Length: 482
Image 1 (tube, one colour):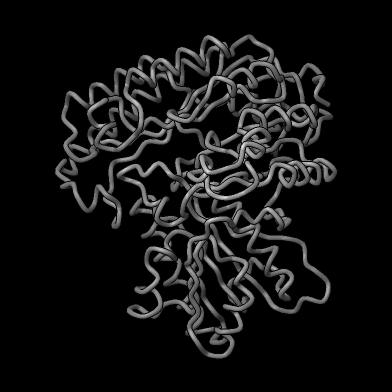
Image 2: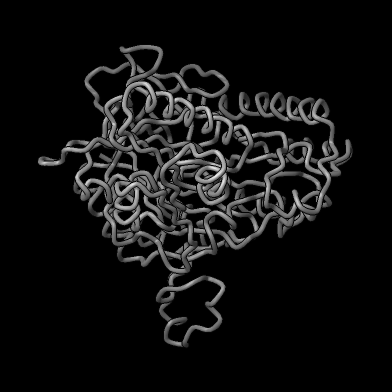
C-alpha cells in the first residue's frame, strides 16, 4: 500500500488503558503503513478480551508482538533487529515471554521465522487476527502457532478497535482491505489479499463512537480507498455477479465520503491511499462541496515515465495522470497533492528519470515519499526483471528527486504567507512548550502560541512566517468548526 505513514517512521509502542481484572501483559510495536497501525488497534482489542493489558515495559511482557511491513527491504531489516532485541530479553530476563510476528512479513517469511531461524513462537497474517485466542492456546501448550490464510471477506468491521497511543483527536477508520492492482514492485496483494469493502453502516457507527468520545478528525483508510464498493459483501472482483438489487443499492467511495461528511459536519475527514486509475471525478466534487473534507489528496504515481509505468503495471500513463491532476486543480483550487516516487526501477534510463523530474515540476507536489527501488521477493518484478540500475545511480537519482521536492515544497508552503488558515490543534509543538502544533485542511503543519486554546480546537491562524514544511503564525480566534 502507498503510505500515509512511511517506513522512515520509528516503530511505535502502543499503550491503552488497563482493563480491570486483566493480569497478562502485552507489548506491541507497529512498523510501516497506516493500515498496520490500525490493525494493531484491532489486535489489542482482541487480546484485551483474552486477559491482556498493554505495557511499555518490554521486560515485563508475557507476549511481545511486532506488526510488520514488507514493502521495503529497510523495513524488514528494522523488524529483524527488533526481533533480536526481544529474544535477547527473553533469554536473559524473561524466559516465559512469547514472541509473535504479525502483518505482511508474517505472511511472506512464515517458514523462515518458525522453522529455519526459530526466532518466534507465533506467526499471524493480516487476515487471521480473530484466530489469536486459538493460536495463543497452541503457544501456551508448547507448540508453534501459525495462521497466514488470506480471507475473501474479513474486514474486522465487527470489532471496535481500541485507540492506541491516541491523542484523542485523530483516528484511523479502516474501510477496505487488500488490493487488486498487482503492481509489479508491490507485495501487498500477496500479503493482504484481494480487495473487499466494509459495510458502510459499521463505518458510520465507528465514526459516531469516535465523535461521541471527542475525536475531531478521521482518516478513512485502505490500500486503495477509491476502490471502495459495498454491494452486500464479497470481493470487488465479483461485483459483476451481483444481483440487480445489489447493484442498485451499492455504495461507492464518493457516496461513503459524502455520507460521512454530511452526518458529521463538525468532524474533519481525510482519506488514504488513492490510486490514479481508480479515482473518479465524483470524489473530487465531494471534496469541493464539503468544507469538512480536507483539500488534500495523496496520489502516488511512482514514475513520470509512461514506459516505466507500464513496466510497473500501473494502469495509467503519464498523460492520463496529468489529466487527473488538471481535473483536481480545476475542481478543487488550492488542493494539496502528495506523491510516492520510486527511482531506479528496472530498465529505468536517464530519459525516464528526467520524465519523473518534469512531471514533478508540472504537478507541483506539496510533499512526497521517495525511495530507491528495492527488490521484494515474490513480486513479478523480482521474478521477471533484472535489478539492473546500479545502486549509485539509484541513489543519485533519488537525491535529485528529493532535492527537487524540497524546492517545490518550500514554494508550495510559502503560498500561505499572510493568509488566514484553519488549524486543528493536535499536540504541543516539538520545539516549544509554549506553542501548539496542528494541521490545516491542506495537511501542512502549523505552529502558533498557545494562549488559551487547547488540543481539539479548530483555530483561525494568521500565517506570518514559514519553513519548507511548517507554517508559523498567530491565532486570531476560533473557527466555525468548533
